[in-house]
Image (cartoon, rainbow, N blue to C red; front, side, top):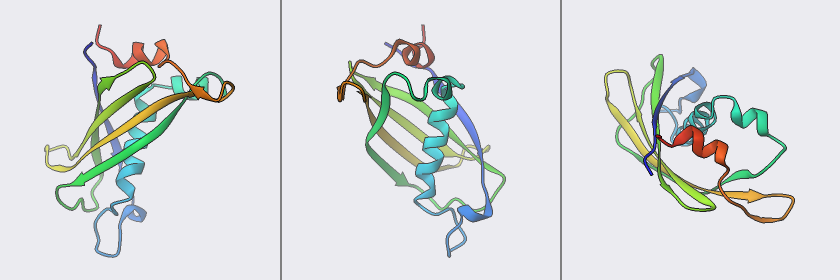
Length: 132
């Protein structure tokens, strides 16, 4: 199984900065979340409240260099590993010139809130992230 790569531009705001004048480390996780939601191209919003939910099981970010206030950053997202009820996503955070600011990884579990247990990754999600 091969996966598509998505690049999502995220505008930076003054409030993203910390006391040192660069983007606060915690804000990177918001960038990752924003990119994940956008890559689902509205499908996530249409399905909220019905079917399985995607729970973040783990998240890690390695900061390469400070990201200063500029117009935007680009979060590149690729599903790297798919299992029956979970998947892992890899990310890079760059600028338009390709400067690398961070790499990250999240692991997600699909959970059926009605049944109270893990459930299969839905086909609609596979249709979005799988290449062919």
